[in-house]
Image 1 (cartoon, rainbow, N blue to C red):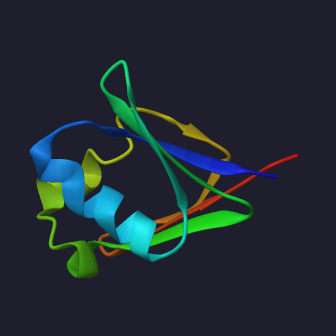
Image 2: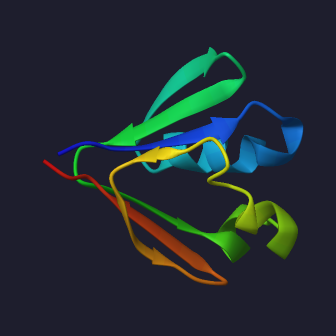
Length: 83
């Protein structure tokens, strides 16, 4: 049950990539303009910790996901893997 987020390879989204690495999530180099962030069970990110404004936060999933959105509000995102 792997959770995956595809994050745009843009400077504005680098905090998502860097924070994901620090959290121990697997971060794959960009392919076709998107970083691939994966975790065994879930990916959990907080907007304020990333320093993203609301517009970037709301567009963070524009590349797509593998899994399901368990939470996505103004400050927390949880993507859980599915079997």
